[in-house]
Image (cartoon, rainbow, N blue to C red; front, side, top):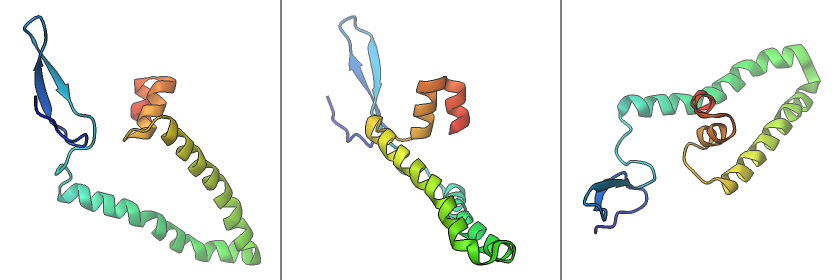
Length: 116
């Protein structure tokens, strides 16, 4: 029997008492699966929130004026609560693809797939 690290995405065949072979795959993220296009998409998705903030800050200041810090703080508080909820859910169900896992367990596979 060979042992693979938990992060490897390899499958090994283990004989069963009936003579059939059962395929057991290691759980975790596969290495070397993100190509150039995937890396570009990940990079753009990381930059997009910053661009949205910087491009929307001017119109927000012109509309709200001196209350911009209060508006930003009001918008930050719900995001902080969501981050705490993600932390607790990750502690309860540690898995890659957590939004998919939680939604699938709560509402079924279709909602899990839609949630990501």
